[in-house]
Length: 290
Length: 233
Image (cartoon, rainbow over the protein chains, first blue to last red):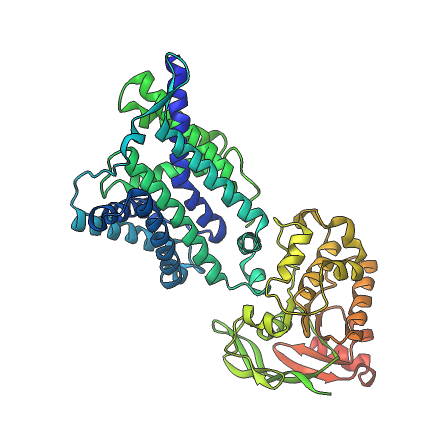
């Protein structure tokens, strides 16, 4: 029963990892850009929410909604005003620029908020749980996080599959120039993709901040977990990213249970490297067009 | 007849390499204007320049008498200029229907829709739900032309539409071209294969190393003159 419990916790944790990874996968899918600042932008969102709660005194729910809107706008402006100029000729340019962005965000957060750990308080919801059996209970909050992740991914998949704009995202991903010949302004499409990615990572950042303490340097870890989830799940499939997040979450919680605290992360990385060695395209990869 | 498209002294470069030299011509409404010439002659560059994918270093592209040089490709589609690019460039992860709908993305008004495209190319009808990447070359070409028509263009630019296709498919595509001109479209077509294109075009220009080496009505040009202009002999 202990193992069932541990596995269940891992699955729920995987939802949070997937939420961090979804935006990364979307941006890579639409514009083949690796955003190394993705994790830091999630942490930035957590600090934005913290700032709104502390200085404006808004309730957490409204602060979250406002944070999502702010991150959406920031995503659009960041892509349109900066990152679009790094795309095109040389694949290393966006990597270098987003790496620099990551450093800037981390240090700006340290300047403004110090390196201390912070937390967002969601009240009683954080501590209550639902009892499945005598030895098995699920915390409400991890369950909500997981359901939010499933919901976000379902909506995003539906958007990509059915909406006119979602179709434009896929067409641009297939062939940027041909999409331009259809009347699509790819600069606008890329900026919208980044806006959506940052809106989603804002949700992830706030949920992380409620679940655990956070500080300005956490973004790098989030980025690594997100990469691992995306790669294990396979490029091009958001449900695959969820599966990748779950595999990572379960590997970490089971690893901690089996070998003790601290080993969970190691087991997570080992499982990732094993998947990378055995099935480098991931489990649910759709055909990625060149 | 009013002039739909005009190029004035257009020079185009790829880096240091000059692909077009001082190209000028005019295309009248309802006309089929053909560019022939060997590989690397600058024909595709010419169509890309008209569509807005390539910017001229000097000279102007005029559409209905107005310069369109400052408009990027995605704006020119909305003005009524559609390019069927070389190599078809379908969206492989989209279905045939979705590919066609992408053509209508700009929302320009007109008569073309999925039904009328299927009427023009009945071979597409059973394929609408198929992934475009799984189609044969001829099917993809028909779809690519249909996709361009979905934007309701006035001016249709066709780049090497017969390349690599079976003769029966080429025949169908050229029949469709005649139908399109009949319904008021203006067409600029680029081909390496001279035979077919001379039968449908009103005016032909031969490209050699980035310059127009010969031009005129097909009836006025002898095959010797065309061969000479084509190969630069």
